[in-house]
Amino acid sequence: MIRVLLADDQALLRGAFRVLVESEPDMEVVGEASDGAEAVALARSTRADVVLMDIRMPGTDGLAATREITAAEDLTRVAVLVLTTFEADEYVAQAIRAGAAGFLGKGAEPDELLAAIRTVAAGDALLSPSATKSLIAQFLAQSGGQRPLTAEGGPAAPDLDALTAREREVLVEVAMGLPNDEIAERLGVSPLTVKTHVNRTMAKLGARDRAQLVVAAYESGLVRAAPR
Image (tube, rainbow, N blue to C red):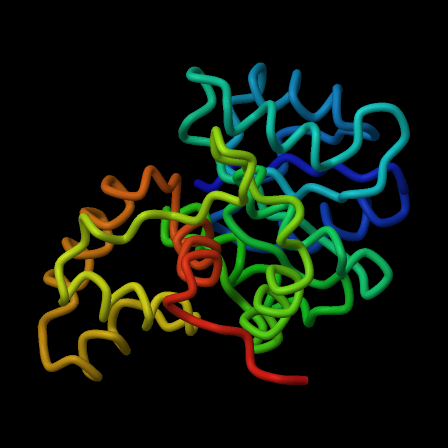
């Protein structure tokens, strides 16, 4: 059973999400939060598997709550799925940097939301709609000033020197939003081999999940945003 926590300041939306989630035999809603601070507290007390996190909430917003959840040692098994709107697109890259396992537009179809919950609950993270890749590329391309700084004051990019040639290949495919099965087919290897490469790449780059691997691929320049 996937334990889902709903974090949104709009009670009507929480009610709609609750009905949808609880219509599934493998999911249950274990709590509702109206702000980020409450979401963090409930993530801890309810032992939720997935938090559906709105970004714009009063007080502690969704980004701050996501950072707190993903940084907490006792919440390492909690996946945060950020729900965004077109008006909040500029926060997508920030949400992924904060540790969110992925994001989904609030206008998504019900089946997309349910599939996204199952995806992040399984630890595979990210990416549902096809718009995800272009959105991440767009906002990473526009947010160079938000990268961490080196001691010399310049923007730091992920160091890919520790990766093998095959791990770089797999990282490119992950950045395209492809699941392990499709990557395996494209590279002529088994899905288990792909999973091993992904896990090793995450460990070498200090990435929490596939979402942060996507960020690393763009920030390092291994993958570049397409011209608009």
